[in-house]
Length: 180
Image 1 (cartoon, rainbow, N blue to C red):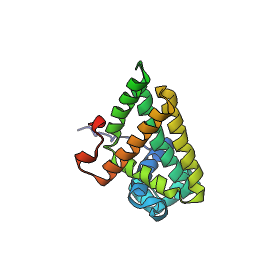
Image 2: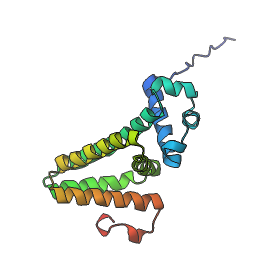
Image 3: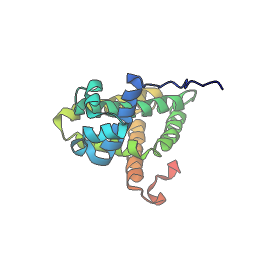
């Protein structure tokens, strides 16, 4: 009888993979508890790592929060860019971007995290970076869509309303008619 060696390899996560795990865990924890009440130990537990490892990836809780916020904003930006691609008019691009955003509303953690990021802007150290991320997204919507300032403002306002509707799990009648 021949013996069979166990040839399975232990797969170690790269630091990029670990960073992504931590960001995913951070979004969930910050979405549930906000910046001030969320703890890095709870984030580490969600990510399946030790708390000190978080500090090998991020210098502090603030930078982790901001990295998680940027990740959420970048996801929205990427979805908008793809949705706008190939559309002929500003109206078509905004409509397509809006429909694509509806799919993002299914990720409740991201929606709650966005709202927590806006609430955390009461903290002077978080206000400017969160504000800058929002303004960049707003400007990108303007650039990607080619729409005028009023149309972009209405688009962003509708998105904020949709965030509230999704976060509060409001009945369908609170969803803007043009989105249904």
